[in-house]
Image (cartoon, rainbow, N blue to C red; front, side, top):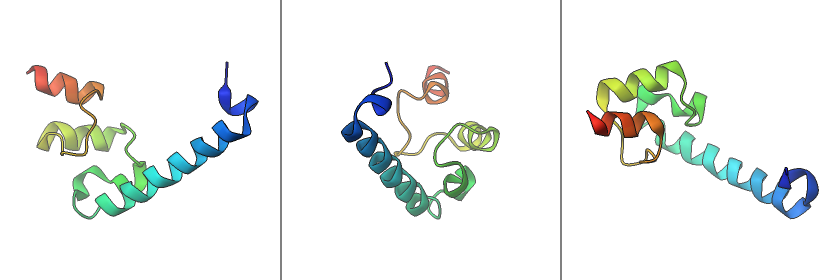
Length: 74
C-alpha cells in the first residue's frame, strides 16, 4: 500500500525529507565534486558510480548502498 496516497501526514513528511536531502546534497557537492551531488541528489547515476569506484565512498555514503557494499567486499 502506498502510504503517501492514503495519509496527508505521510505525504508531507516525504516531501520534507526529500527537501532536506536535496539541500544536504547541494551543501556536500562542493566538498565532493566528483560525485555531482548537486545534480543527482545521491542517486546512483553512471557518473556517481564511476566516482565511487575511482575514489571510494565518502563518510556520507550509506554503508547499505549496494555499490558501497560491493566495494567493501573487494
